[in-house]
Length: 253
Image (cartoon, rainbow, N blue to C red; front, top):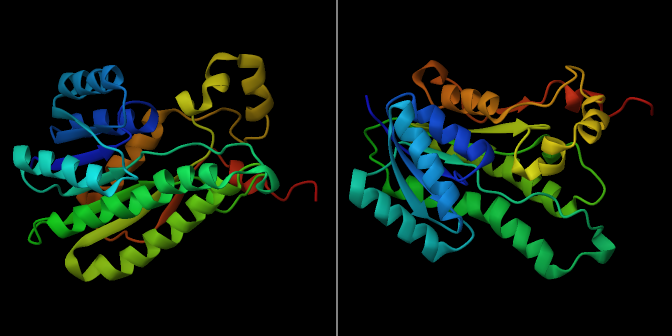
């Protein structure tokens, strides 16, 4: 059965890998992007080459009007979606709380937490109630393994954990499963220095039990599986995909 799948943040990184993974299933994939039309077009091409159908749709997930407009466009083309993958997000600022501006705090929470709320709400109110549905949010191990300079990001991802679990309870009776994937170090543009600087990358991967960073495609495989019937009894889960990194947080104490 061909599904309509919405992937936010699909112009690069984990989002792009997820879009392509659903393309391999033959799905119709809405490639939601913030402002980079060139990268979005590249993802569309990748989805189509993989065997799916793709549509690029501009969407600022932190803006209610933009979310509504994007979903309207997708629904006009393909009808209501049955899968939502929320991958749009910003990385931690590296600024301590004492030095962080309110603008920075709001900017990150608007995208990483409020964006998840707005897209989920729009998805839930428009879906076909007769079709099983899945929402997968891309969270982070930093939802619980906090880091100095990451108050904005860690707070957003911690809030996302509670949003996921609450929605899982609320929507279970309606045929909607809601889960979170929590990546550790993944080689994406969000980790641009680690992608290109092998010496720097080694200083980070030395802390990972598996001894390497993850690839976006590995996260996408998990997301695709969580959205499939093979995972039909899984909801409210938060699954780390980090090579064991989050297990290391108390060593040396």
